Length: 376
Ligand SMILES: *Cc1c(COP(=O)(O)O)cnc(C)c1O
Image (cartoon, rainbow, N blue to C red):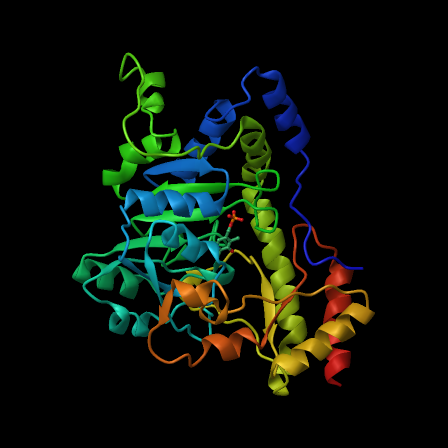
């Protein structure tokens, strides 16, 4: 079976994890964590980077930082992973879902303004497949209405929008290092990016259980104490050590994924010409990271048939997301504003193909020819 995903592994993970093990410091914020923080701060670049145990928890920190209170409204696409909403629902927010654009599957920036009320506190754009949302329009709406923008950049590490790294545009941003993402910290992991300096100090406190321990370690206070609400949002040094091996090879991982993505794209484009399928579109102002490769088929039934057919050829494929507003949880979270013109319809047409770091060419070729056979 050609698997749908394989966690990225570059070769030096063992060495770094072993070094962390022998260092005598296993809990969070040791030498490897600092190396990772520094790397993101210099490479993206950004004001402050803080590793977290998951993207879900980075989003939860963001909801705490912007002081979400019961009744506040948060605008996001319905076509996303459930954590995008849960982080805010946990603090009492009502979620306002907005339709997506069919070309990128991202929240349609032209439909956001109609969803803004005097209760709106934040907009959460999700950069689907590592392809940027139209951030220029979103940031100007946020400025006009005094809203926070929190980028769900779970899939967007090393992608760019108008030459700026995703995650460096909103007030705050969250990334994932889950094993299904382009870079992993050993299976689970995440990152909070702080672009608005006003959040810098409090983010450290919230991440350290509501203590000012980070300031204490830097010698800024002579004892540490309980200063605010918070939780435990530090990953262990072993996770940071695993991630470090992947950051050292970040360009190689991105380049390899992009080359697989391009093979799919050119190998399947004859089916677009024949009107059989649709392929992803990358706007000119975006540079993507080949987080995923998907095709769009006619409808739900055709997708089931194609998946079955691929499975009988030993090829795994996958689809997502059930639009949140149509799900058991999401339907209690708030409301969809405007028409669901594309969210449900496009979600039912989308099929994801296997894509991982170091995927053999012959797998890609086999998948392309199986899909071509299906349509012939
Ligand atoms: C993967 C993902 C998440 C959750 O990431 P975790 O690190 O597993 O918490 C959130 N949002 C989006 C869009 C994702 O793809």
